[in-house]
Image 1: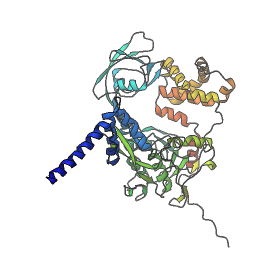
Image 2: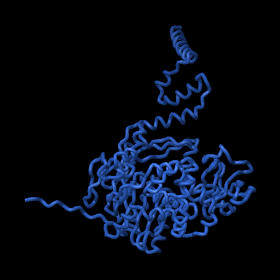
Image 3: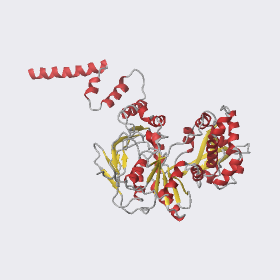
Image 4: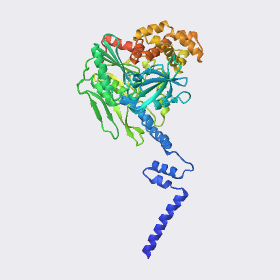
Length: 538
């Protein structure tokens, strides 16, 4: 009897406690003692909160905040954004194959991807999309996101696109069978002069190495003996792609980069000596928009004394992320290690966990402190390191170029900045292209097209257009910024009519960084020299 009485009392206490907590709503003891407090909290909110709650939305808000308290590059990516990011790096996506811009609540086809589904169906640059699958698609509902949603889709599916073509009053309907659309990461390859090849790499994706080999083979056929690799505004991508390309330029057993973290043992990437371009004079271009894998590239070339780095200090991202996916297609990119250049420097710039504003505003701060205009304004936060031949390099805030080229703002005026920043130049360039497409399409060479545009005085035509669209005419400012305005306007028209190669070649003609690269080759300065050893005084 005493034993049964004791058991009954214990059971009563347990049951009473459970129901007391259940109906009083006090279950925080479960959260505080559990190993998964966040999960328990969500269950309690779902079970007891006064109003209905969208838990998915709550999680989408909570996870980014948690990750932001770690570092600036540990992030949460929704399923939709994860797909967009994957398309950009994997080298292709499934769609119709057009470049478009939205003007006056209507989708205007800016360009047709060669050999793509849209070209095969008969769509042309300049067509205005007004219907998709028999439904009107104009007005306030027209956004970049909605246009991509309607036009992209699984391979081999069909979409009917209704367009208004210049000179026609009736809608023409084209049935387009969606297909794989290549996304190039090597966006431009051409010969700057008779000896110098130029390659522009936008990012490092799954196909970048293959694209790079094709670009190098093309330049080889044209007899290049010097090479410029442009990594300006290259935000990075896959580490492995960058390593594969760097390997083409280094002799055997040279350290390219190594990664290391608290739970990630040191992992080294070294050259195998099989690269086909180990001795070609090499210049790498960088700026404040060069980040991550592009900094690995520049750091490996610099620390191994393999080439000359020209431009402005790079972004400063030295953290390595691992992608971890959820079942709904969303993912997190979690920082698991730091990467180090061959000399041992980590180029990650300083950050305060949870304070993203200072980190994101670093580039603006550099500009305000004069770093874009004077090399002496560069502030290194890391210690000094040394390359293979003893040159001094610094960590703790990006790759500092061997040769600094300041940004030229001599002819920048408030008129030019307004015209560029509010999108008026882009709008004018497209309108001009659209209204003159028949004549402009007669040109197949960049230089001839540019000469024609100069004769048309596109700057004056833009000034009239801008004045009619809210940007008051300022004759003295227009005169001062005439060269900049002409460069920007004509470059966009050239891009609309020809391609990205022609656009890049046009912009590079008067680029001070390109001019400095050519000077380096001319003076045989592409291979860095060992610094002079100070003579000891007796």
